[in-house]
Length: 333
Image 1 (spheres, one colour):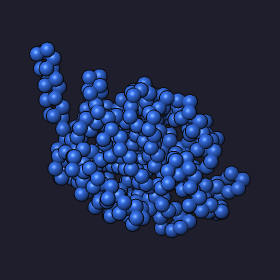
Image 2: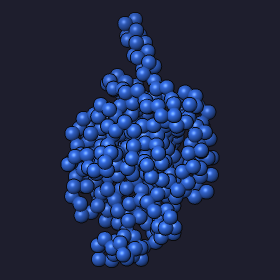
Image 3: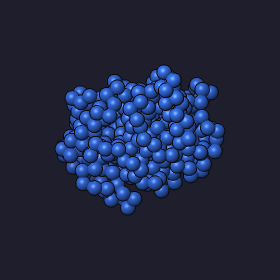
Image 4: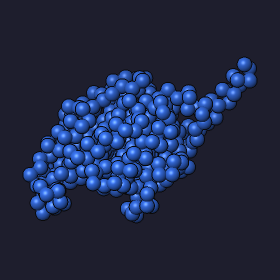
C-alpha cells in the first residue's frame, strides 16, 4: 500500500513538472500517455477536421472509415467526438455517406459537428453535378446550405454549447457565405448575436477554472500553423472575447497543415490548437504531406490538466512532435 501511494506521488510530481508556462508564443510541453494515466482521465474525446467525405470519392470514404476504426482502438470508451468542419461539399449525398459510415463503425455516443466553408460548396455546383465557377451561386442560397447542415447535425443554429461530464464545449460556426456578402470569401462570419451568445456562454461556470473547449472550423489569423490569412471576419472581436478566459482551448481546422509542424499549438491569452485533416494533411508549402496520410487528435482531461496527442490515422501511430500537456488554471499570460 505504501509503495502504491509513493508511485502515485511520483506520477503526480512528474505531471506537474511537465506543465507549460504560458506566454505570447509559448508551446506546451511534449507528453506521452501511460495506461494508468488514461484510466484516471476524467474526460476523453477526439477531434477530427476536414474529413471531406464526398459521395463519389472512394478515398475520402475509406479514410474516414479507417479513422473511426483507429479511434475506437485508442479508446473505445471516449466521451465525445468532434468533427470540426468541412464534412463534405454540402450535398445531401455527402451527408448520407457520413451517416452511412457512422452507422457502421464504432464511435462515441456524443458527436458534435461544426460547419466549415465546404458546407457551402453546392453554390459552385450546377444542376448537372459539375463544378461551375462561372455559374456561381448556381441557384443555391447560403441559408439553404446552412439548413442542410443543421438538419444533418440535428441542431437549430450553427452555434451551440454542451456540457459533457462537467466540462463546457462550445461550437461556433459561420452564418454567411459569398452569396450574402462577397467579402466573406471562405472565412467564418459570426454575427453580433452569436458573439453576444458566446460572451454569455463563456461566463457560465468559468469560475471553476476548468478548461472551456471551443470549436470553430476557421482559425484566427496569424496564430496556429497555416493561418496567415484572415480566417474569421470578426477575428478581432472573437479574440478579445476568448482572451478574457485563459482556460479556453480553441480547436480549429481549415488549414490542413500537418500536426508535426511547430505551429500546431499556440497561446495568446488562451490556447489555440490546429487539428490538421483526416482527408489530406499538408506541409507548410501547402502541398500534400504524403499519399494516404490522415491525421487527428486525441485529448484527455483531468481537472484543469489537458493532454493532447496527435495521431497518424493512416499508420495507427502517435506523432511524437504533436504531444502536449498544459494546465488551464494558470493565470493570464
